[in-house]
Amino acid sequence: MGIGAFIAGLRRNWLQIHPPVAPKEKDAIKIGILGAATIAPMALITPALSHPGVIVYAVAARDKARAAAFAKTHNIPVVKESYDAILDDPEITAVYIPLPGGLHFEWAVKALAKGKHVLLEKPSVPNSHEAEVLFHHPVLTSNPSPPVLLEAFHSRFTPAWKLFQSLLSPQDISHVLATAHVPSFVAKDTDIRFNFEIGGGALLDLGTYPVAAVRSAFGAEPTECVDAKLTAMAPPYERCDHSFRAKFSFPNGGVGEVDGTLRASNWWISLPTVTVTHRPVTVSSKEVKVEAGNLVTKTRIVTFVNFMFAPMYHRIDVVDEFVVTTPSNQLVKRWTKKETKKAYTFREIGVDQPGEIYWTTYRHMLEQFVNKVKGRQGTGVWVNGEDSVNQARMLDMIYTKDGLGPRPESKYLKEVEGQLKE
Ligand SMILES: NC(=O)C1=CN([C@@H]2O[C@H](COP(=O)(O)OP(=O)(O)OC[C@H]3O[C@@H](n4cnc5c(N)ncnc54)[C@H](OP(=O)(O)O)[C@@H]3O)[C@@H](O)[C@H]2O)C=CC1
Ligand SMILES: O=C1OC[C@@H](O)[C@H](O)[C@H]1O
Image 1 (cartoon, rainbow, N blue to C red):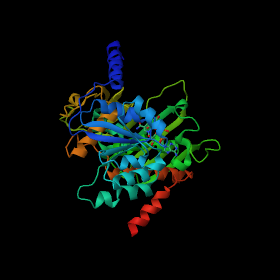
Image 2 (cartoon, rainbow, N blue to C red; image 1 turned 180 degrees about the vertical axis):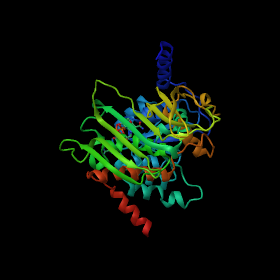
Image 3 (cartoon, rainbow, N blue to C red; image 1 turned 180 degrees about the horizontal axis):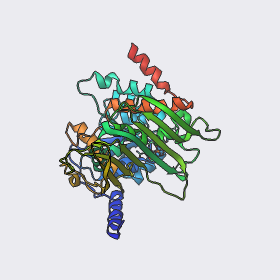
Image 4 (cartoon, helix red, strand yellow; image 1 turned 90 degrees about the horizontal axis):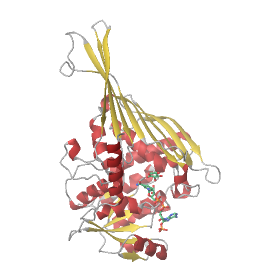
């Protein structure tokens, strides 16, 4: 990286933390936050500053004093007594739920029932049973104008992700490897990420990104989990994994692999990366000029470095290997073409959609969330209910194959299923 790109990167990241503040529109949606969670400033409060259509209006925590301190730090005008009090406030149009995964089902169902739009932290819920009930709930499926429910898969909304997808031919993919290695200082043993009862497990928390990347690259759901190896925490957290590896087969015969950990070295940063290898495909004579009768094949490998947080920094390397052979399969020539691509705005890739270098993954997602609430088209990128259900199924497949077992079901699930039977 040259000095110019380094300085541009510093400026971009500084602006992402200190974005320009937009004056708010009259009909800006008012969002309430359930829980004074660590992630809320990064995932919602800062992105909302530059969004004219969003006001972060209220917060509630289990302890009101904690909520008040949080509200003061982040200039949130209203502090509520409880999560329920947020849902009961008619001023609030949407809620952001950054609670531990094991509480997502309960609070998402309660919020939707009160007519609130829901931005639900990833993973949407800890197991596919809850996902099926939540995303197929009649409040969404039997309602002429249902509230919006979005699993907050921020990384998939960026221009870089769109560029990455445009470089793939899903039917020709033979192998995908998606990795995410997070240093161990990020989550102590006592973190919610290792609390089984509320949806703990590194695969569920962090592994959800590589799993989504593999599904997204193939543009399909896996047929089978052929191998899975989870490494469990030491007691008393042994029902949670801190590291994961898994291998899947896909309908086109390709193989998808995920590999990650919340216990990587604190001294070595490795950026989350997805590497997509295609099968050799025959290239038309328009693309490459060769002697009549000879055959040209191209094998493409696309590597997306920092796919989880692309607006901070990313690199997409495209390597095309060309091979020319005679009709009798004699090698004539072989060469490789390498290109490095990036996209920090949609304009750079010729897409007429808003987006600035100071937009984080979360800001891109917020734009589409508001577009959906307002019935506007936007980029068309969305994570719909079926997508979230399939994502939960693939995570379940890994926990089941390994034997550590799927994450527990919410007590509230039985109650909701009972209500739905009535
Ligand atoms: N999109 C992203 O990049 C990221 C997403 N996440 C997701 O966001 C969520 C929260 O993560 P994070 O902010 O790191 O976690 P925190 O532990 O900081 O926040 C969790 C919040 O949940 C509330 N809570 C309610 N019940 C419980 C309970 N029984 N035990 C513990 N907390 C409880 C607490 O709220 P209260 O204030 O009411 O006490 C707390 O504020 C998770 O779903 C995680 O997967 C996390 C990090 C990054
Ligand atoms: O969403 C997340 O992204 C970054 C990870 O470090 C974290 O554990 C996870 O919750």
